[in-house]
Image (spheres, rainbow, N blue to C red):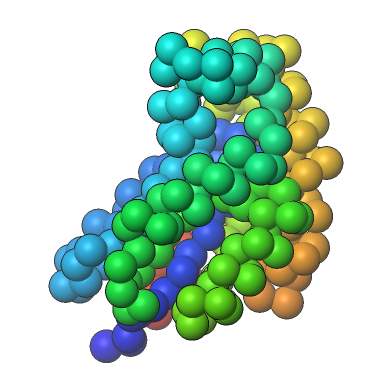
Length: 195
């Protein structure tokens, strides 16, 4: 059996591509193999958790999310670095990052963090769907902040900010076809990453 100790996976892709669903499948798969203390977090969920807090930062992030914006890199970094500081207790733990990095500076920071703490390089995964498919899925999702204008803003910042992350990791980027039923996408992801 393949040894996944110390594995770091970053699953990124267009809004609505199914990142969270596939990260849950990955988490469950590794647990079934007997891995414990898996560190798995969603950067989008961290932002949404912050946005409901009755604080200055909470109100500010909520406004950004409601407009379909991308909170500044410093707050994204602070949120997921806090997760790493609090939850990554051993070098052999599997780390699954859902929806980050979303900017080049974040990708470079993740590279440096992993190097500094003695972990292998990240395996970046682009769960690829078209802009049209992203629009279709976002239109069906129905979350409070998923209105058409905000969704178009999200697609815009994806092209501006996330594509450079893919270019940064072009030599190690794994591209998975994110189209079709989630179970089929999972089979493609599992066959590419886990075998």
